[in-house]
Every structure is written in C-alpha cells, then in structure tokens.
Length: 123
Picture 1: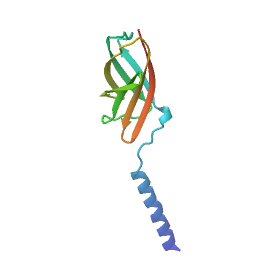
Picture 2: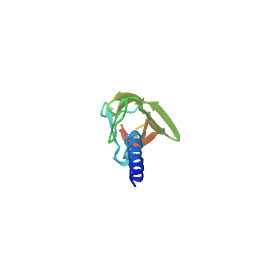
Picture 3: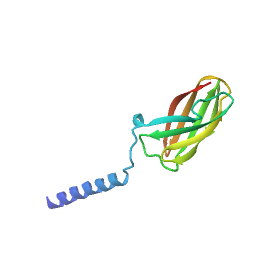
C-alpha cells in the first residue's frame, strides 16, 4: 500500500513539473486591441503620413513583427512596421486617393498571427 502511495505521489509531482515547465502565457485573442494614430492627425491624399499602432491586451516582445497592409483597389501593399517597443509599431505611407481607406495591421508574435482592421479618412 505504501509503495502505491509513493508511486502515485511521484506521478502527481512529475505532472506538476511538466505542467509548470510548459506554462507559456496563453493569449486571449479577443482581448487584443490595436489603436491606430496618424501624424499629422488629418491625412491628406498625396502627402506622407506617419502611422503608429499600439497593441494592448497581450505582452508584445521586442522580437514581434508587424506589417501595415493597405488595400488599394485589388492589390495589397505591405509596409514592414518598426517595432518601437511596448507594443508600439510605426511606419509611413502616402495615400494617393481621398476617402475612407482600409488598413489591416498584422502582428506576428511567435506562432501567433493577429490581424486587426482599421479605417483612415483621407482628405
């Protein structure tokens, strides 16, 4: 009986160790948000705009990468964003046309790929 108890305790301890070692922080993808800001605040067609995306709701490492994905007609234009740290990514773009323009912001962190859709009004 004592040997069975010792064996059982050994299995429980081993499971605890394995669980603790594989304890990567899980990400609630629904909780991840992105705030997009532009500089200048009023975006003018034909003028360069600086974009800044701030991701919240997860820990974003310095190794994470992001792209700004502009849909101009049927063609996507991808701009590699610069990781500024603390979940902030930046890049520049010049919109050719006025109107509401769609930007898909892609975040790549380890094996996670998150895409968020944002609109920018271009005057």
